[in-house]
Amino acid sequence: MIPNQSQINTIKNHSIDRQRPVESVITEPAKPQNFQLSKLSTPQKLKIHVESLCKIPRNSLNHTGMQAAIDYIKSAWCEIGLGDRIEEQSFVANRLNPEKKESKNIIVSLGPKDAERIIIGAHYDTCAQDDPQIISNPGADDNASAVAGLLETGRSLKSIESELYKKNIRVDLVAYANEEPPFFSLW
Image (tube, rainbow, N blue to C red; front, side, top):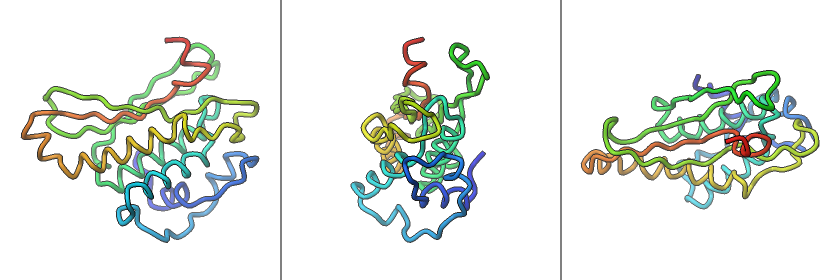
């Protein structure tokens, strides 16, 4: 599912108190956009991505927050023009997941489908601390910064995609879940 413009605006533009539960973030009405990301410099884009992701409590114990992070990632790839290439890889981590909630890796591919593949990835979850509904660990360094880089790598590769076809190279950009505890030690 690709998020609609109202959902994209809500995710990109909300401001949140670090002690406010995620439900209040997601249900706020969309605010008008004051800029288009495509008109900003790369450092400005990276900063916006990091700040936006840090406002979302995206840990494996908060499925609403994880879905908000997925929606943000999808909206960024849609804004770049990669929306028609978004794939979701769904799975259930059975251990330490009594509700059997589904997790998702989000994938965008550029270049020829059957070519030699390069995979570039970053995890979008953070380590849950205390109450999973509260952002006690915003995860700027681990790992919003890498997700921001992944998103902007998509923008750069899209601009030179014809070269990927000429050289017969496929690049898969993967935003993946469950790298942080309690799941990372299980693999």
